[in-house]
Length: 137
Image (cartoon, rainbow, N blue to C red; front, side):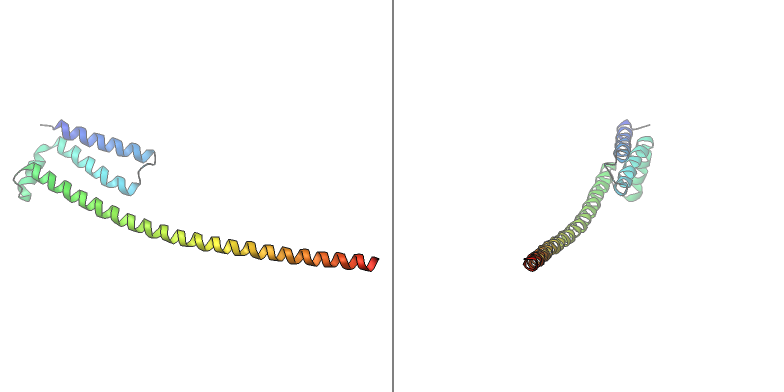
């Protein structure tokens, strides 16, 4: 007997993830996990007796207990992965901020150097003009 609730949930997950992938709103590395969950829901919807067999095999009393245990494990794994990704992103952001600050300092120093060179050139040019006008008089 087919479980239409699990089948519908699996289809919604697979279709939603596929649409998000096509729109480039979800990265492939995250989509794999969601597609696996959607396919598992589809398979359990088509073969609900597999859930009963898995429940007995793993020693759970009720199929709901197995599903909740798997869901909690999945949520813990996703949380750990996202924490890891956040830590990596914060490190990259800190490094980029430091590089931007160094680049800004270098740019300011270059602008000061250019301004000093222009003042020197202007002073030389004025001195040359004064000499030329002084020699011509």
